[in-house]
Image (cartoon, rainbow, N blue to C red; front, top):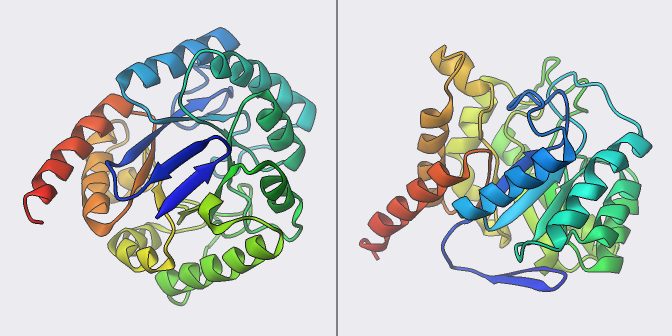
Length: 278
């Protein structure tokens, strides 16, 4: 299996990829705006690369539940200087986390090579046509509703089956828009329109999505479902790493995380142990 994102190519099987998160926002659920300043965001991204990040994901609009949307101009102001600076300093692919095709286009022009589309449940095909035109990698993420509505009583009959059907349907739409299958990664969208029980069912059923033949990207880092299950209001890293290690065994190839160093260490140990079984 091959993943292509503009000039970058990853061939699987291979050691799991780690995508480090850089939130250029004042209201992130995970870091409270610590990297809202451009220079702080750039320095943080460089530190994540030093810790072993294979990719860097830059976002300028919070997608936490009930987050207020920001204007296109403000999102561009937040992310473009950071992407431009990183593109000249790192060799790792840069991903733009956005709902807006215009922001994605500007980010790709600034040096990004992947579009992390949390709005892949969209009705229009502008983002898909952009991916086809540019050859950018595309993260196809499942979300029920929007960031403003997604946690208002999400309901599924069978969450694993329904998200599998969503991926199949969206892969067909991407192909119709001209996006090559090798450009696409799949993300089940933990916490995006899911209850605690839905998240646990998805984590238990991750292996079923490997049949779609595309790399799986998992984002469990610091998600609130950990606190809902364990009652741990603060530290969520140990539980996140437990999910990460189990996901490797289930066939997930990429991990979206705020805690790069710890995640890399957990992954390499899990892979070393799993390698002894084969």
